[in-house]
Each structure stands twice: as structure tokens, then as C-alpha cells.
Length: 211
Image (cartoon, rainbow, N blue to C red; front, side, top):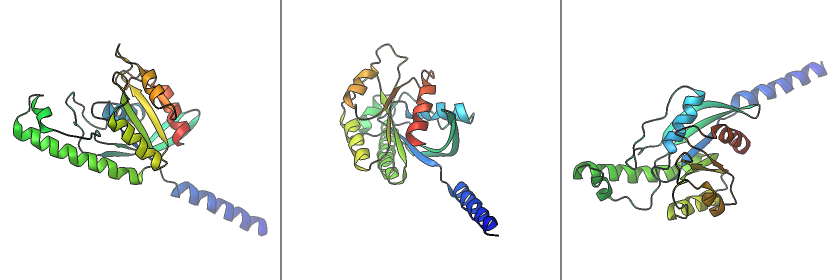
């Protein structure tokens, strides 16, 4: 009887852990137009056949955080189930005149700037409820920006596991080594979210970092 009770207790604990286990909540962060939503769409299309949202060449297309639950990826012989949060682009200043320069009228530009500012605030609040962060940077641009430095410092202060993605390596001017040299304390994967270049390596790193 003691053996049976022990087996029951062990199986009860196993199933309790199995069914109470939460998915890892991973936020995709970065400056506007770095390719956050393109990456979120790539992950979802690869593993669910779906997409997260639309993309645009105009900054701040994503102005509200979007969450997709239960995305299971396979890497390194293991399965990892994630809740993926695609966040608005982080910026220290959002000026409606920038949208007018892209052809928007003044009313639409002011509305977009207001929504984008609210989106930045929402993205920062999400940091309180995450298990890890994928920080997307444009590999064609200088990584030493106030946004990148502030975001990394914020995440380090919160002790959140961080994976840097150097995106847009399909472009001839891309130089991901500049990002690697700028932030050598964090793991980095160079990819093209648009073309899918090196995406399997990213999944392996995600499984290693957040699994």
C-alpha cells in the first residue's frame, strides 16, 4: 500500500506541474522599423501558419501591444511553448511632423503620434509581466542610440533574459558585427526576418535562452 500511495503522490505531482506550467511570455522589443512585427509574423507563420499583424515603411505601424498565446516551436530536439508579445516601437520622442513628412495630413499625423506615445508607455508596462525579451535592432544602423542603450539598461536592471536580434542582414549595408561589438554581454543572432535567413539558428537560441 505504501508503494501505491507513493506512486499516486508522484503521478499527482507530475500532472499538477504539467497542467499548471505557464507558457514563457516573451516580448519582442526595439526601435520603430527595426522589424519587430516582421519577426513576429515570421515566427507565427513558421509554427502556426498565422500572422501577428501588418507592417509598414512608416514608423509606428504597431501602436498597441499584440499577444499570441501558445506558440510552440521545435529546436534542439525540444519543444518550447511561448506567449509572444509584439510591442510598439520604442522612441524617446515622437513628433507628428515626422508623419506629415510621410504624406499624412495634420489630423492623422497628430492622432498617430498620440497613439504611438501611448504605445510606448504600454510597451514599458509589459516589462513587468515578461519572462524574457527579444530585442530587435536594424543591422544597417548605428546601434549606439539612446533607445537601445536605455532599453538594454532597463532589461538588465530587471534581470530579464535578453536575446539581441540583428535584423535585415539581407541588405548589402548590414553590419551585425557592429551590434555584437556594442553589446558583447548579450547573445546575438543575425537574421533577416523578411527573407528567413538564419532563422533556424534564432529558434535554437530562443530554446536555449528561454526554455
